[in-house]
Image (cartoon, rainbow, N blue to C red; front, side, top):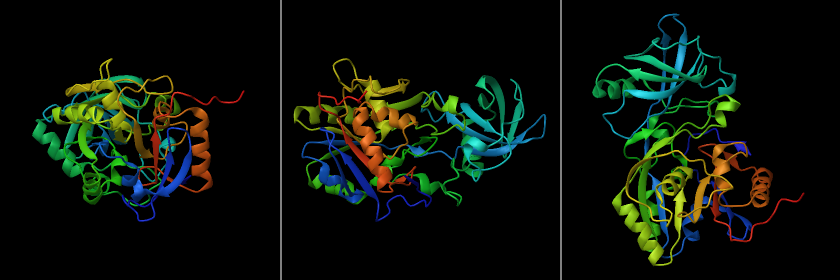
Length: 353
């Protein structure tokens, strides 16, 4: 696959690789996505807007230049913005590959980080030189203002030009709680949502604080995704029950939606409205109780997003899909092409010995 390097959310030539419930693969234009939906289906998207979660500054005691990337927090409460889990890097910026970024100076609890108008204290080290818990000074209003004026979107080297905040907000973005964009939602616009309605397809949203996609360390990357708070409206819970009653499918726009819905579902598959923290890791052993199909970005096999796709399709099918993506030069990463994967039928194809 080819890294998408231009920050265009809905390029006219965007493509869609389709994997149906029988493991059959076909190629399509991405704007044909709505045509895959049936009357009474329900499409659910993550409406989280993206925080400017990259903060440059210095380590007060050493004077060393650092970049702090906010990576997780405990809730979606807009007043609860003092404590974050964060990744800290040494000097440099997004133009250097994340895995090549230097470590920060040696950090210790109590260290101060001066980040433009913001000041934060390292509360604890989290078993890796880059991973810490930080506490910001000031009121919630002060912190939001500091993020807005000093923060920038987290960015990786495959996009060479600096990203603006509007580059990473989906068309349905609402509360700014995501650390990186729920980029599967880039496929949506108001015209596509209107086309769903005309087709008899319902549309609903939830909010999940989508976390970071890469830490620059293979061991830490294996721990992704970090725990992510979410909120499911009562209207979305009711829409799922309505789709089930009418024989429709639940189609998730992105892995974040799958994670929230499957975490919120009881043993009977009923999704309860309200707030929670998704802490599960979905993969080949997971039994999906809610989601029937997913529209997602293209993902490399060593990523946590790809592991989640293994809950939908067996390894042979996903390997064939990856080969098809490679052979046809699909674009990957957040501004890349997309895949649509229907949950497999009960008969699972086995990897040959």
